[in-house]
Amino acid sequence: MARYLITSAIPYINGIKHLGNLIGSQLPADLFARYMRARGHEVMFICATDEHGTPAELAAAKAGQPVAEFCAEMHKVQADIADGFRLSFDHFGRSSSPQNHALTQHFAGALADNGLIEEVVEQQIYSVTDGRFLPDRYIEGTCPNCGYDKARGDQCENCTKQLDPTDLIDPRSAVSGSTDLEARETKHLYLRQSALREDLDKWIDSKTDWPILTTSIAKKWLHDGDGLRDRGITRDLDWGVPVKRGDAPWPGMEGKVFYVWFDAPIEYISATQEWADANDKTDADWQRWWRTDKGADDVTYVQFMGKDNVPFHTLSFPATIMGSNEPWKLVDYIKSFNFLNYDGGQFSTSQGRGVFMDQALSILPPDYWRWWLLSHAPENSDAEFTWENFQTSVNKDLADVLGNFVSRVTKFCRSKFGEEVPAGGEYGPEEAALIARIQTSLTTYENHMQAMEIRKGAAELRSIWAAGNEYLQDTAPWSAFKTDPDRAAAVIRLSLNLIRLYAVLSAPFIPDASARLFSAMNTLDTGWPDDLNAALNALPAGHTFTVPDTLFAKITDDQRAEWQVQFAGTRS
Ligand SMILES: [Zn+2]
Image 1: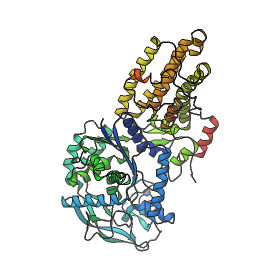
Image 2: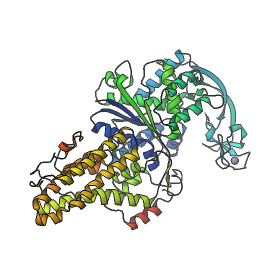
Image 3: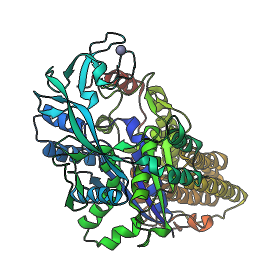
Image 4: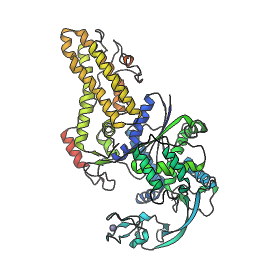
């Protein structure tokens, strides 16, 4: 038994995420966590909401709520949706937790003690009307390049030119529209990432098993241009982790908070502490996952994220950990994803284009989405969701292949032998061939799942389902029954055992359907088939079962057409 620490990139608190976000980190992380648990490993699966920063403040203001209240409500919304998709987090934490405040301040103090924090005085735009400094993207004005009148202080959305706020013509506050802006001096803390460049470079070089996509992004940031740059870790904001040096005040930094990019990844650790605190565990219980001096030496730590998050997880967060000079666990493997597009374009949160997580669950159960998303995960390139593809995949894979097998076997057995596993007959060459085929596929499936090759894992699982249908076609128990009922009994006995096997193997992908199959097969034996022959005799002759209701309903053409229109844009 091994130990796996698994984290999913943490979703921002502001708003409900779409299916592209779900398949970009949380869902594949859940698949891996479920698989590793099924194999008997010890798993700690952590996610959280990322709650600090200006967007949360502004969204709360728009909703007319104090920001802490807004975040608490949105956390509950996201947690409920995660439950709806059966995401099996051991803990779904909050980056605004007291634990994360303390740990973020601790890391900043340790980095300062090691000479890795620099205090920098700089000019920043201050809005007199709003009574606050404005981040670049919250200053709007006319683009000097193309004349677009809603260009942001960091970039013009229209012509994509990178801008400085001072480039804008007629700059104004995006918060209030006020033009009463001035440049003011303010002091910030910078993490001296450049001083850690060699250590990071060596560490990345040691990761020979990482995908090129991951290491090449890290190397680019390390070496392009001037190389890895120092990075501000504080902001002039109210909402966030107050700047402190460990437990002590930080002179000159009063009223400032840590920048959200600095405190968010630390929440992976803090959320594990939140888990311990919420479950009457001790510090040792969470530290054995994170501190290599307290038992985390034998932990394998895997992170899941979209490709846009790779630089932070290969450089910035490791810089925080290495720079602390404390024995915290560094990531062992990063599984990153490309993007999922929606029906000929992109998912758009602002335009309400595409299917959002709450909407998805309002029209179909979670397994339908889990199966499609995982079997089409954007692993090696961007992927695209289309309703035609979704309909085909659900109807063929889930309804025709898996659902139909279960239905035919259980209904046939009920009508000819009653609702119990039939005795009689012996397994012959056809059964031996089937078992050999499944054994080969099972080994392949296990290898793909271990390697986090998600699409390949899904394809192999589907082929294991299909093997059952082909076996049923070849052996035709409905014909055999007329002349040789014992032969039909043997086929059905094996087929009922296959249903239980399918429930075990499919659980990481489609946990609800799997639970229904276990219930129909009237068994609590969910053990992994380390011995396939034994697993296919788990339900002996005489064992009772029930015929389950339709496992997966087919998606009709009318439904498909209706949803296509419904999700085309302008979510209300
Ligand atoms: Zn422009």
